[in-house]
Amino acid sequence: MTEAVLARETKRRQLQHIISGLSDGVMLIEVDQTIIWANEASLRMHGVDDISQLGANGDCYRELFSLRYRNNHFLEVDQYPISRVAAGEVFSDVLIEVSRVGDEDERRRVHRVRSLILEDSSGAVESLVLIMADATEWAIAEQRFEKTFNANPAPAVICRLSDLRFVKVNQGFLEMTGHSREDVIGRSVYEVDVLENAERRDLAIERLGQGATIPQMQAELKMPEGGTKLVIVAGQPLDMNEEDCMLFSFIDLETRRKAETALRQSEERFAKTFRLTPVPIFVCTADRQQIVDANEAFFTALGFTATELIGRTVTEMAFINDGTATDPLFDVLETTGRIEGRDLKVRKKSNEIMDCVLAADTVTIQDNACYLFVFMDISERKRSELELVEAIEAVMKDASWFSQTLIEKLANAKRVNAHSQPSASFTDLTAREREVLGLICEGLADKEIAARLNLALNTIRNHVATVYSKLGVHSRAEAIVWARQRHLFAGQGLSRR
Image (cartoon, rainbow, N blue to C red; front, top):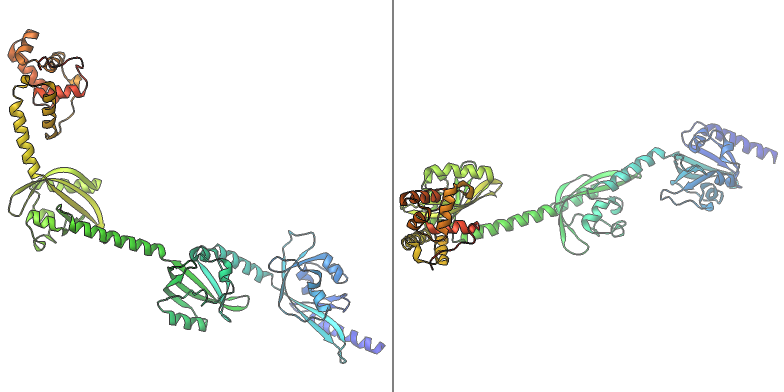
């Protein structure tokens, strides 16, 4: 019996001598969980200097050290490696975090633990062995990768190559697709098909089987609620937890596709409106003023053909009657980007002049800045207005025979068709001119005003002409309207009805 014990102790000393210099930590334990020996690497991994600091046995060890799995769940008593090996269990690659009890702020050490049971020649258990590898740096790197992966806004998933099942998914992928984490983790790449309708699907599947890089390609991801989303997908092989994996990353193209669709639809609507609008329109480039298109109404109204027009500059075509007006138009467009309601005379191919109201704006066509010109033919209206003004002038030569209401209506009708004049102020008139204007508003003729003011008739006529000039009006009726609009001489009215 004594010889057997000596032999066993001799073997233990030899074993201790062999393993004392190993980088892996080793602990020798009796079946009753007594800790009988630990090498320097094992002590260092626990942050202690002496074996006594590990505790005499499993119970003491559990009181000194808190162990948890990588998912942050604490180990129960029977899950401690010492308990498991004492129960005769042989295990490998158990990852645990080790920290001292009562010192949670201490840096956690990560051990990769496996067990070994030494038996004698008769099969009886001689020693229990725990072998620990320091996985702290690996765990830190893994944690850093985990944080980076989860925080990365670019959608991404990771699948294990051995069974092609997803083991990680980040928030970006979940938000892009609408999947939940449970929908993805544990499912295969064909159940949640990240290569759906990929433009080079066969190549992608081949590279996936080889564990090789999958080049960028477009694909259509199916959404859990129906429909698809256009993406660019790429695959990059990587090693994770000593397992070969594939990282799939994505670029969401759906926003771009919607924008392109909206742009195409907008361009189609613009083209239809441009063609069908009965008002003459043409488009020229902003840089060279070169005509690039015109609608049918423009060709019909001006008499030009597309061959004569397209590719020529606005200056070359000279259809703006006043040649000196062309450059100022483009100067305004370059400065403000648009023109609204400008009267313009346009020369047709037949040299006939057409009165128009011009509106112009800046548009972008195929990424090029262009100007769009719209002409409203007002030739007939101009002729009608001219005839109306002439008729009004004829009947207003003697305004004393008309009521105030009729005079104001006639004067307003004339003013609507007249060019706008610089605004004048009542204070621009002298005291005498104000007096004359007041008597005009009473409906007095020049002779009556001369008699009222005891002045010569020519003097009154000169005053009236000056009042007209300063106010920018051309008749008594217009002067009366001017004063009424400013609420001047409110208590006065025409003396004749």
